[in-house]
Length: 165
Length: 118
Image (cartoon, rainbow over all chains, first blue to last red; front, top):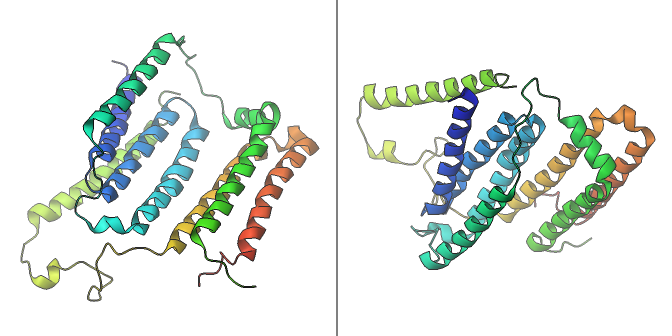
């Protein structure tokens, strides 16, 4: 087995193992921490595929930001003092949802045409991403700022009492 | 590309190994003389006050989401910085619109007093 393949399976195991920890953990705080393993695994897979910019961003935004946000959101709720805070919602609905999603994903994976990438030195991906953002997909790029603005205002409206002045 | 990031992997592996060795050494070599004080949760050297799983103030959440929004804004600036010269004025205008929208958000946040802790 080539080294790259071995590393890929190692990273996939870390990602999926952590994801199982998130899904099956009974303590919601530990679930949130297990999510870190998933995010790190995905970032490492990005790097393995040569998408270094994406990998670093995954690390910055998800591990450094979203995870902290998730932890704060968990700590905000008052239900964490019960022993089993991550209660199951029932196996049957879970099985149905997982079954439907898995069938759909396998069908997409089988329908896709997989091509082998060219081995060789990786090209820097940042310029390509910038070209896509500021050239071809300029409208989605500008809309992204509106989405961020909505997140900002939404957080204020939800969390903050009106102050005078 | 295959072996370009192997040093990073080795660094991660060594870091994990060192941490694991230290924890294991402490577990196997250290003497074990428990006392009620040692069993207590460590809270900066003070006697612990309140449960460790107390509820956080929503202010932390607000600060975190402010951080993420402007974090993502900076992330979008990196590709622009790489292509700054070839894009020229067009790129500057695009980025200005992007930043302007978020500046509206910043002004809103500021005026609402969300940057104050109290």
